[in-house]
Length: 148
Image 1 (cartoon, rainbow, N blue to C red):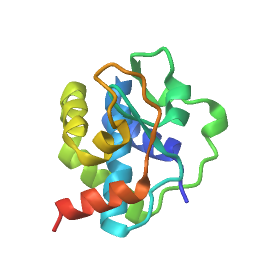
Image 2 (image 1 turned 180 degrees about the vertical axis):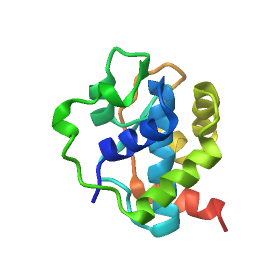
Image 3 (image 1 turned 45 degrees about the vertical axis):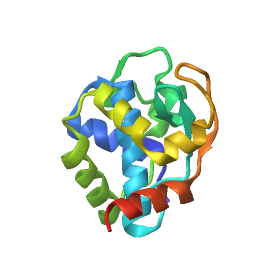
Image 4 (image 1 turned 135 degrees about the vertical axis):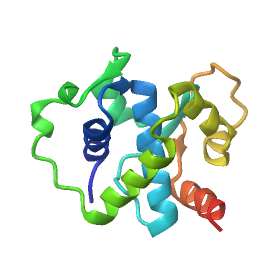
């Protein structure tokens, strides 16, 4: 299985510099649609329901304190990542075709309208800190219903 860093680096390689918000949401949608289309996760890391939408903490730890990132912001220790397979690349490319031109705030607003983030947030109000994991099975079910 791949990891979130493969996905992030692939996205940055295709799209170039972007905000960390946008990168997080594109990785989230890549994971979500992989679960919907193949029933398999694209990577093992989880997303948490933060106030600004889904965030993968492992990815956040790489870009903490930055507003934008490029592929060069990833440490050299991540150079030896396993290659993405054709199905994974196809999933990410489809996500980029759909969401790649969206602004970060549009992606944030979209995730806020969707059940997986809302369920994980529970009764938290806007701006409240939240770290509840968005379950992969909930993501797969929700986005799977969206394509039926």
